[in-house]
Amino acid sequence: MELDRCLELLYCGKLLPEVTIEALCFKLKEMLVKESNVIHISTPVTVVGDMHGQFHDMLEMFRIGGRVPDTNYLFLGDYVDRGLYSVETILLLITLKLRYPQRIHLLRGNHESRQITQSYGFYTECLNKYGGSTKVWRVITDLFDYLVLSCIIDDDIFCVHGGLSPNVQTIDQIRIIDRFREIPHDGAMADLVWSDPEENNINDRSPGLNDGADEFLNDTSEHFQVSPRGAGYTFGRSVVEKFLHLNDMDRIYRAHQLCSEGYQIYFDGLVTTVWSAPNYCYRCGNKASILELYSKDSFYFNVFEETPENKTATGVSNTEYYNDEMLTPQSSSITTRKIISDYFEDDGRDHTRGSTNSSLYQSSSSSGFDDMNMGVNVYSDEYQSKSAQHRRVEYFL
Ligand SMILES: [Mn+2]
Image (cartoon, rainbow, N blue to C red; front, side, top):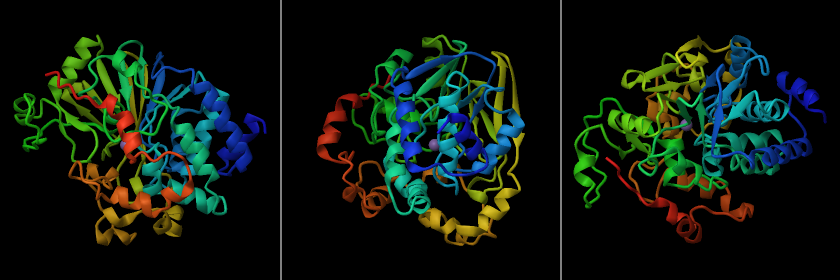
């Protein structure tokens, strides 16, 4: 099928046949395998945060921000899960990337993963939309392994889904990560997609280490601390200042955290969160934004709200798609619109590091991960020890 014909169908909200999806993913892997972990692009570009399967809001976003290729886009990841239209959302992005490779760039988010998609909607959605077949989920999650991890705009701005890592001081250290794999539990690659900035962390979240790094970690939010998400770290101003100074850059754009106004500025503008899923999960009541970057110092947050089509989407089948366990009991009622905290976004993760008893782990095994003969179980000893070499933590502050 011609790419333009695919785009025509996808813009109408139609699905593509399995065999077409397989071909598209194969072609895109061929393209992405040649890309560095850190891609370089130039302004003007519009930066987009989490979309999470809110397909109609993505169409609204293209109406507001301009379609590809009239507008250049950088997407910061988390295309799937939570919303009801992850398949439509990721297929449109995949096809746009193939059709206009220089006009749209897609970073990997923490939801572009086999494990996470089995708990938060994408896996179930693929099965429901393709007659119980796991094929579409498998080819698309295989493609996720090829997505790039970060982007530099005009040599000045570092872009990533989550944030910084104690394992990453320089951009070159990102370039040498072996990214063609499932996102590991920890290490640099995990931190890049899981970490969060933390402006006012007065809690003493001791990481429980007994080495020399302890005294640096326990005092303030200035440094890396264990994240309450159960993966990645939180990091403060001094971490950001040191990273930007070492790499001769000005600021960081990232996504990954729900913002009620659609964006959030940290550390006097050194870090900015862009969030592009309005009324997240059809119930959070938040605004969304895209960041239109004209030049290094000229930008505009284009704020938008949910499209009216979501109203009809909400009532249909959201319990089918959500893993609601981590939300409060009353949230199962659609009329209850509760502003959930930032951390609810990925709160299936274990809050106490090191335990294998997390809800994530349980739902992964109970949803048939082991039965699917995918050949890779990232929780296996073999896999973990293989990736252990990437896990040396060096606190550099
Ligand atoms: Mn995320």
